[in-house]
Image (tube, rainbow, N blue to C red; front, side):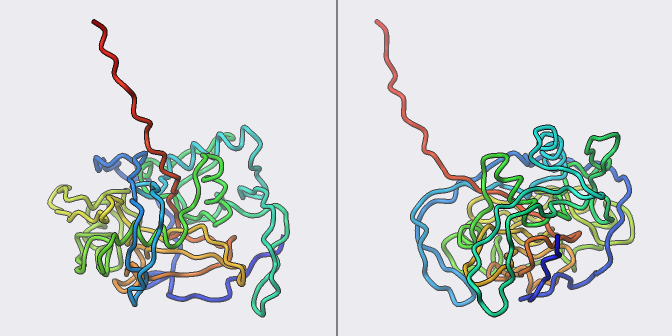
Length: 311
């Protein structure tokens, strides 16, 4: 399989660090936030992009309130491997992709049907290891966002679970709501409101080590951890970490390009990379220690039930 090269970067993946992170065991931090939770994003118009273009999403949908965690992804890998949906090859998780439509644009690469990289578990940078034919998470990183996952791998997870990757406009509405805020939580940014380049020192003190690293999902929720007071970084719909921690793959496969897009910025980036209109691009087999994802799904309104009183 040929590597699908990264052709362009709209904003830099790295603002403060470019070295892969080789993690060791850490103490588990309970944030009180449930990684299995979902939040509803209501239908309606909203301001999209830097120039506040008014667009509409005419349906309700749900988005995960946090990134997919290491624990969730490890459990998926074990289940999908047992089912035969994925396979292992030379230290990599691989899986089938039906191929992309090819439109013949100048810088578009063909992506034919075949097997593609999902997750390079043998590479440094992640916190999931294969031990005795079972994927396990490094101690303490269970509720950290999974990283080192390609777009193919993120989509395979979503498909296996019956979910999908959010479209860019869906992601943007979940991050911004209906006003013109610059960040998912408002118009200000501080070292205590999200995990990005300028917040790493305080987080390092808590988690240990001398390098920037991921934070537990939902960590910035207004709680105090030791002497470290966080601010709540939920977006208007209630989603955590829509800016910072790790980049998030979105689902769009645009007709004139082969690469895919990422949103939200990461713990290696500066504050301007976390704007709700910020985006990045990479080939669908690209991975890194600051790239993860979350899922979306259609919202099905519960059918009201009639209460019958027996006399």
